[in-house]
Amino acid sequence: MADFTGKRGLVLGVANRRSIAWAIAQKLAAGGATLAFTYQGERIEKSVRELAESVSSPLLTECDVRSDEGVERVFSEVGDAFGGELDLLVHSVAFADARDLEGRFTDTPRDRFWLALDVSAYSLVSAARAAEPLMEAAGGGSILTMTYLGGERAVPHYNVMGVAKAALDASMRYLAWDLGRKNIRVNAVSAGPVRTLAARSIAGFPTMEAIVEERAPLRRVMRFIPKSPRCKLCNVPFAGPDRVFRLAGFGQSRKNPNMCTACFERAPVGGAEIEVGVLFGDVRGYTALVESASPEEAATLLAPFYRAARDALMRKDGSSTSSWETR
Ligand code: NAD
Image (cartoon, rainbow, N blue to C red; front, side, top):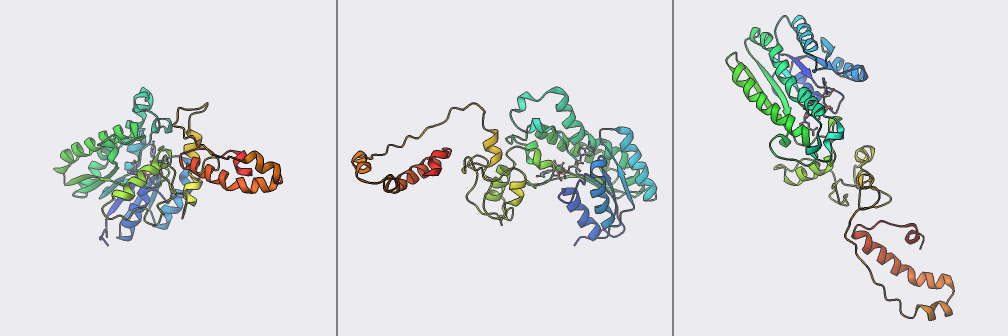
């Protein structure tokens, strides 16, 4: 385990136990660091307070990174708590309107574009600027932010957040250039998909997880999650430890078991153009059969055909109808 004995750090971006910032904070605390935390809004104060207290944090304070005054106040409190010095800054903050994390990037309106860049990219600049004198006083420091591949390549649904991450990545490099002469390092970690509060807003997030699961060099991501059956559209698994997916609205749809509820509900209302498979069943002699057999006997004979037909159609993305279900 890395040794952080005597290091003083500020962690921005803990919302709950699932937050990446909390995972980082736990490692730092276990290595001996003393940590201050911020939280955004009263709604999450209680949960962040419990977490901060569990690592004996000397400071928990509110911070909305959109406010310059708010950021300056936080660093002034941090200076007071840590004797005017700071060694570590974890910046694990991002936000985009959920409406901009699905559909087309092209349709992102101006105000929500700037909102995403303000919270997710500019906040690193303002926090680094406020941290600079405290880290200089400490003889140097380390600033860490969280980025994602969607800033380098177009990742479906990541949209404006990808643009924000590109701005964040470039900001990180320019900050590293500026602050390096003061022995302050600035780096970004590009995380794979992790199921956190922020990730829940990204449409198709399970697809990202499934792709990483297949391609991650160590193949450790999602290794406990079975491969099939999965949603045909977003690839979320239905079997195994799927409670978290069900809670997030990605459980297997009862109306179409080939899809998760989220994909089924998102399907266009009023119909869509789809490929249709037609199954032709040859039931020659059916009239003679029903004339000589009771309705129950006829139904029993035909039931395997209906079952086979339904299964064949379902494999081609058909929906189950009540008339098939009752036979
Ligand atoms: P999270 O929801 O736990 O953390 C996001 C944090 O941002 C929250 O604590 C939230 O309160 C904070 N925040 C949002 N708007 C804010 C504002 N105006 N002022 C102050 N704080 C604000 O989710 P997370 O996944 O742990 O996200 C942390 C970082 O990791 C983000 O930068 C995210 O883009 C990045 N990341 C996440 C993943 C993933 O799959 N979860 C992958 C790569 C990178």
